[in-house]
Image (cartoon, rainbow over all chains, first blue to last red; front, side, top):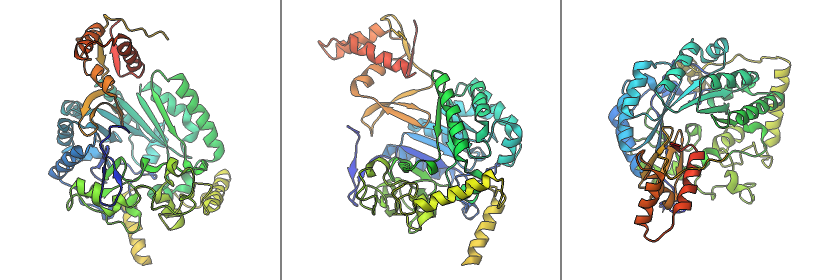
Length: 389
Length: 93
């Protein structure tokens, strides 16, 4: 981008500002969605940054050029200092996004957030009907979410509604879209489940079949067209069916800076699982030191880290080799090509796995039950890791 | 869609968007949920004059006074039309 202030760091990389600061305020959450993007190890990371820590993080990131802040979690509404953090973000000039389930919200708080200067609210729905929504979230929340969405509009926030799409709700695409139309959403994110952590444990029950996906895509495109002057509908299809990987995080250490509840800084919210990470904390380092100088953030900057077939690939600048976490999870080596790519030597194994899941889905074979995201299941997972060592 | 903007109409920044100067970008930007558009210098100079009080004609006069001798009418109208299409601004008819 012309005019953008860039600098070359000690590792020789051209470093752009961390435009997007994702502040994961807590891993606590009243919902238990089985596709949660938080780590499965949440029970091992119970420390939370203080209000003052977050204010320092925001100030330092803003100085580095962060313009967007997302208050996320877990459920950010659990933090009683949220109003204070929003006010500070506004005062610093951030555009502030509250990314929430809506649980823990009421009219008084929506009003207080407005007064503090919150710019936008994103509410998640698990499905378009009460039964499935409450089943997937593991709590009774559907009616409350509808009520909160109406209030978000009443207080004139731009409203994004986010629905994670997977095999259990994808056939309700028409109902889901009718619901978001009736709620007068400004933006709709139909986010296909990405398979890390919790969702990877549950992939056998979550990955849609190719037929389901084609039907859903057709419906989504119809609505995109019909409501194009009214709302923006974004449908991100699962990369498992694409043949080419996504340009994950728009490049490692390029735009996104995630701060986990305990203060660990991450290039993406899933990167904690990668081996050989130093996991620098804002308790020990400034945002400037972390963003410009840490090993973690330089690890996959640029393209020098790539191996074949990426290294000599003429599309390497398009997707930067895809997702490092997916490469690690499926091949055991984070510097490999993302196996989503047909050029990956592991791509056939991925196709075989997708075929196995699809066969089971079509025959209604359930090999294992859904594992819900909660502290109990996280502890169980941690225990199993210790035992297997 | 003929979205012609008259010189008398008064534009305002839509409440769905925020315009602000970004020091690190060295530019004006439009901010919206989870996104940002960086404006060119001329777009920034124009949109920063959109304050809900100045008419399109006022904005053109003001810009032409600052950039002496330039005939900016068509450029400004075109930019405001694009801004309106993008939803960044609203105008009184």
